[in-house]
Amino acid sequence: MRTIFKPTFKPSTIVYLGKHIVPSSKRRGVVYEILCGECEHKYTGETKRSLSTRLKVYNKDTLRKNILKNPDKTALIKHAAQSGHGFDWDYAHVLHHVNSYHKHILLNLCISL
Image (cartoon, rainbow, N blue to C red; front, side):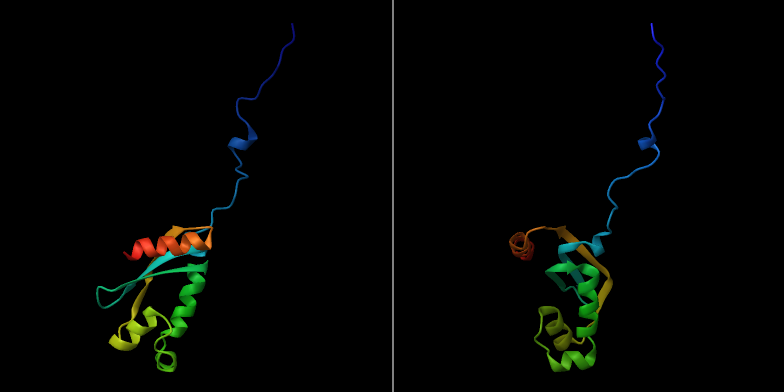
């Protein structure tokens, strides 16, 4: 008869070597929602980029000088140009993560209804 020693725990229970969890604002390919800071309007959009990258572009686009250059660039910019409202960037959030661009479009249409 042979004696076998078996550890009571595995090293994998201490060290997790799985994938790093990416915050939702940094994930690419999202459908998102941005709320107007002064009224009930909501803007729903989709992008292949991350939400944080898209919000940086929107921040630049909603500057007064940029709104005057191209007030019809997007529905969000159009709302800002017509009403003078600002958007609540802190509460912009991801609704869905989608890998396929065509699924983006379909989800965005379904959410808008």
